[in-house]
Image (tube, rainbow, N blue to C red; front, side):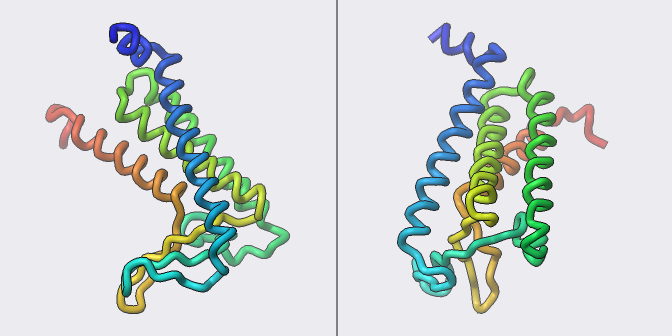
Length: 173
């Protein structure tokens, strides 16, 4: 028990938690995407909850929410470069947070890194990200997403909540 607490407090233990969580996210994301690619026909929805959720295979060549999806094929490397740049920025943020951050921050960074790497693997393999969760309501569709996107979203939300909740009253304006 004491060793586990010491490991969490050590820089190596913090990094190990981030890497473990990121690894789980990448593996889960890639396994589910393999199943989706094997079982779904592009653009053909499989209803999960009538009028709300369907599984629809979409290859997203753009960034989050399809941003830059219209970039010509010859320029898709720009999207990949922007993804790598985002990972670099995340690494800088992680290096600032990890020395003083607890399990919440470590878990959030692991989720974000794992999601980013999962989508980057897709970009390298297919030139696009495999998306398949289609949330819709009365003709309105949220952009399709995947497990990696969900991990990134949850990780960012956890970091935001930590910042909001842990903010001391003396720092508020």
